[in-house]
Structures are given as structure tokens and as C-alpha cells.
Image (cartoon, rainbow, N blue to C red):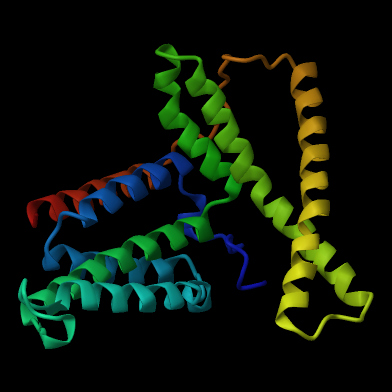
Length: 254
């Protein structure tokens, strides 16, 4: 399995959970993580490690976050940790323990949110992600027909992003097989830009085929159809209780 792919194929408990529970839990926990204190961050860290073990997700899938977190750490370290007077120059400032502690907590929160989001993508198929999000947009269709169109657009986008990634990889490999790969950085950038054209053409062709198929099946603007047929199980109910208790503790430690 390629570590750059978002979904990790497995048959763990997290993979079998209702996507509505995973989408709602991720949204609620991410919001509460911005409000909770260090006790909630410790609880979430331990829970995240436990979920990674339960889902049989390899740690290398989280490796892509390292570079971003390093830059965020440097940014928050200087932004919150380095202080100076209003009339003083930047180099005449000093490090603040309170500011550094605040920067650590901010980076800790962001790391946990990124980790939960990455785990969510690893245990939830793109189509299930879209269906879970559509479920929460369904009540808005009574207020505006645009909600149905947005939900459908979001579902299709999440569904076809992996397919476009696979097609882009095939085009890249075909270009590499031809040989004569440029040496300079500027020429390589130009070669990469040229790959965008066939990807756009493939996307337009797929969109046209999809539109014709939807019209043939009777889909129209402003109409909403229920896609999700996943039946809630006892595991889903226990998972909902666990997410509720988790969120309650984060709220208590606010």
C-alpha cells in the first residue's frame, strides 16, 4: 500500500463504524479541542494513540504532517514566545516562558486536529466521507435548494479526488517511460505544468459522462435523494456514547 494514499484498507472497528458518526465526531471534537485545557489535550492524545492501534493504521501515514507542523511550531514560537517593547527593535526582545507555553499548547491542539483528520481519512472511504457530510446537510434542503446541489457536489468531489490522483500518477509514469527527463529545476517545473492539461481533459470528460448518467436517472437541480443506507449497529451506539463522553470531558476541562 502506498503511504501517500489517504485510505488504509483494513477491517478494524473504526473502518466499520457508521460514517455519520465519524463525520460528526470529528467535527465536534475538533471544535472542542480549540477550547479545552491541557487535561483535555492529554486525554485526546492518549485516545488518538489508542485509535491508531485499534485501526491497525501504520504511523508512516502521519509522516506527511511533520513538515507542516515544524513550520507551524517555528511560526507560533516566534509569534507568541518572542516579545519586545513597543519602542524596542525586534532583536532587543526576549523569550517569554508564558508565550512559549502558549505556543506549545496551540501547536499541540493543531497536531491533534490534524491527527484526528488524518485518521478519519485513513479509516473512511471517500464516498462514505461525502455521504456522512451529506447527512448533516439534509435538513438545510428544506430552506434552500442550493443545499442539495452543494451536498451532491461535495459528495462527487470527495468520490473522484482519488480517481483523479490515480490518473495523474498514470500520466506521470507514462511521461517518465518516454525518457529525456529534464535536468534543471525550471524545465522540470514546466514538464509538470504540462501534465495539468491532460488531467483537466480527463476531468471534463468524466464530468460530462457523469452528467449524462445523472440526467438519465432523473436527477434534477434542487432535488435531494438519500444516499446513505448504512444501518446503525450496536458498535455504532457504543461509539456514539464514547464520543459523547469524550466531548463532555473536553467541555468540562474548558
